[in-house]
Image 1 (cartoon, rainbow, N blue to C red):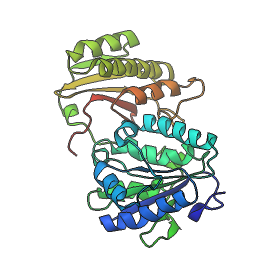
Image 2: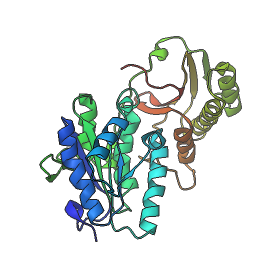
Image 3: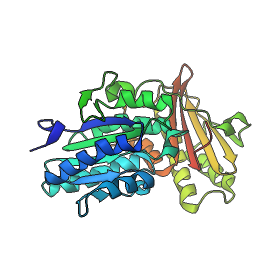
Image 4: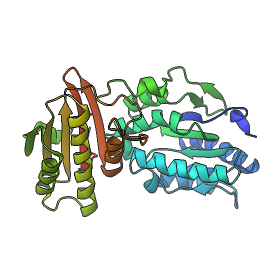
Length: 320
């Protein structure tokens, strides 16, 4: 039986908590964690190093709270989804009636790559809903941009308050609506320069060759292989499922390679494309999922001219 505010709830009890001080963070996190321990529920923390230590020191000695490695989980949204689902499934298999996690995204993810983490925050309302999970997603108002907080309000169905209360979020938007909205990501500054490569209707083999030729030792071997695979998959999808012409552009910056693939179609119909694996890949979903696994940032853009996917390998955290 589930405990606390989530008692009687079926599926994911997904709360946002926006705090203004260390004291407010502890006022919500400590009772949440200790109540979970007292109820015999798997209870975990996934905060950045500073806040994790803040919570660790405030917990009583011997409290059975697991501290998860932030870096391993929040490398890429599709990876976080896969790893969390495996973790949650292991708890359920061991008999957990409820699982509690308080976590936050590292501050660097709230900048140039926020668009795909906003998609993640929306998608997990569906992806984790088959687990008895109570999750509190913490955001520090002091250093979280206003547009990020606006997305937080729309991707969390519930809100935790510093006084211990819980309430429905008035601006929450269902994932099937939120994920299909036009959500342009910030333009990478390198896109303001002339592309190093520009192709029309390239074969996947030609696209792969151009990416390898452009690298010149910039990326790690794994990073280069991942980008090559992703570009090949995305070009194949555009040729097979998009509307011609298909155009590929590639830019090389000192710390990253950026590739865009554009066609005149409307893009994938599945709102979870890329974040969750498609069943049989028949409409390109598997290729998009592969690209999200193997690149450091992936953006979607739809407009009157069609659909563009941007793939970044290397450091995607440019100033915005």
